[in-house]
Image (cartoon, rainbow over all chains, first blue to last red; front, side, top):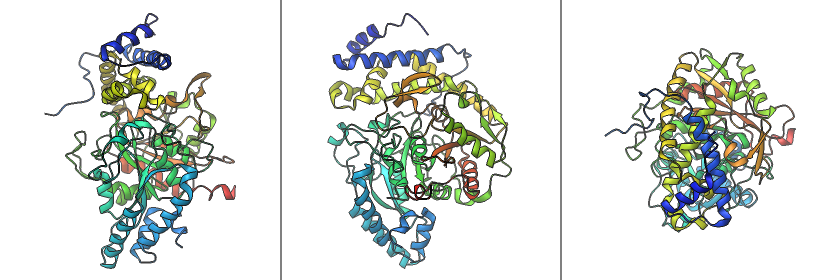
Length: 61
Length: 470
């Protein structure tokens, strides 16, 4: 897991970017969820994939 | 026989109605009485459609009289309240959506079942916006477990589990994105079918995660599932993810037995972290099938992680406008995760979708060697209502997102699953096993489920039937 992921700063920045209200009583739970999701994402990102592996959803025109 | 009829499996109800042993109106009336008596205690239904039920029953009785009994004649059922039902507000478990006008028409799958002769009793309780494994809902209260009302029904199709296990209805429709049919099936002890991704139309079902959402039935036998599945299939251009595949004739296949199918137990990840009952149930089913072989589903933990990332991001994007305008009106249990999900870097989400392609290919290779995989569905029996934290493998974690650790990697790549309910010796609660088939082979999973039922290894009694003899 990346030790330098600052979930608090990420939460505050992205809330502003997206125009989301994060009330003080909600903030810690949002941060906890961001940390949990970051750990999940890290598990995926550390798995080596060939350049030919495309994302799963395929758009059919 | 009017109250007793509700305890019968769907094909038996339909046969009795077709043979004019009982009228569909009598079945509807019995179901209405049972729902009226039990619903306050169990919290299964949020919206009742009794008038419609009686009208549908009269239509069925007229068809029977004309010698044209439909396949599900007079079978009482309910739908998770994210399915559109004409004239009913589709609340999707939320406070916000109940400000919408009533649905102008039925969802495609509701229409299909109506044509097949079912009787709709109403819309069923669910976790808010389906982001849930508990069946608890801050707006509507919890759907409770009929086998022990102090326990969770499981979610998010909680009322769909409660109503069937309580004998209010013979069957229900639910949806499953990460386990929302299979978890309530496990906690309430039911047969559930999560079909292949893209098999059944989701048009008119309020979405959760477009790339992961499935719809399917819960019932009390494998034959019920086969009969319902045959009625639910059909091409629908209104669902952009529906695959254009020929329909299976499940009722023609379901009785063919498990012989000839190569069956294995999922090892590794699927033998870790659960409580003893989860593995004992798998072992009981495997023993009945004389299966000892184990297969490893490669990178299952990563598959679960990737599903988690995609889920939170897709759901948050769907709800972004509501999160901006009405954040205080969400169930807090969903709001925290949706707010966080809106903030993910695109690289995390797209990496998860790329990993999904890798995992699909890896599982195709596994299925070149086996036809059916057995795995636990929930790591434990139904949790006590209100449980916030669980301990798995010695690690304490939030309950709500982690009940589906064994279901999530499977739906991640859209594999069909039939759940089979096991009552372990001395157990006061059921637990299911996932019977997992390769894509588009729902019939294989149904065959195994029916064979296990015939062997007396799995069963889905109405609550009270089982406890009374224990």
